[in-house]
Image (cartoon, rainbow, N blue to C red; front, top):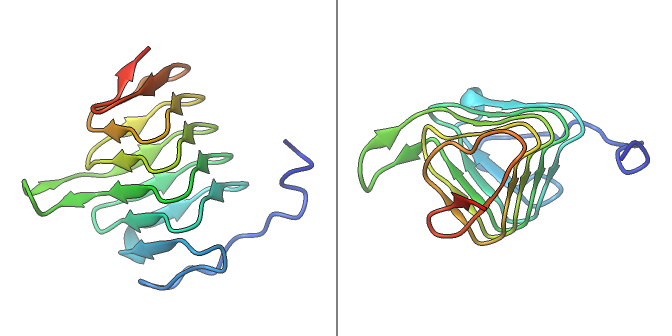
Amino acid sequence: MEDRFKNWSRPDIKEGELTKWHWKVIGVDGFKLGDKTDIGAFTLINAKYGVVIEDEVQIGAHCAIYSESTIDDKRGKVTLKKNCKIGAHSVILPGVTVGENAVVGAMSLVKSDIPPNVVAFGVPAKIK
């Protein structure tokens, strides 16, 4: 992994604007990004109530991470722990923590915490 991130640099993140890698954050003041992360194109991060992405996290393209849901009025910080991986087209709902080294399969809906060192997938995501 060291080679992959050899030239990694912190992205310039502006409120509601695409980064140079084509993902965006709404609520930048509530967003904390670790080092050596990989966030796929067209991912949307709503950090109004807090989103923390720790070091070496990988997020696939077209994901959505929400700290707020206007459908059911849920709010809560989302935390993606070190070295977890989120598959493409997945959705993470408010208040969820994905544990260290956990893998969330593509096209999953994560509405509750995922413990460390497991694989989870599905709608809703379940540990397999």
